[in-house]
Image (cartoon, rainbow, N blue to C red; front, side, top):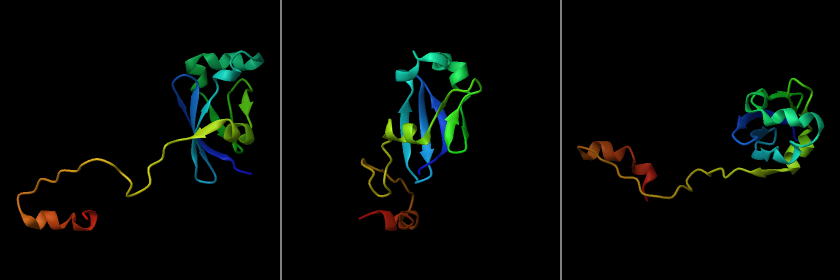
Length: 107
């Protein structure tokens, strides 16, 4: 089973989660905020008190989400693969010696 190893609270009741399989995913808790004890999560200060315990996330008032729920109801973040960046890099150097430092990165 994939477990949560880190959780970072974001704006609008979202969590940036790191899983034991190396994935980072985004979980939106807003669908749960009208249900029972989860209404406390509407308070941004309280929501920010999330912590990871034994592979799941929980709050001081007993609200929690299982690793399965977090994984299945989250979406992958757009992680960049090394060497797949887009754009233009302009290297400014006073001499050719400094440009040689970037030789491995230029086609």
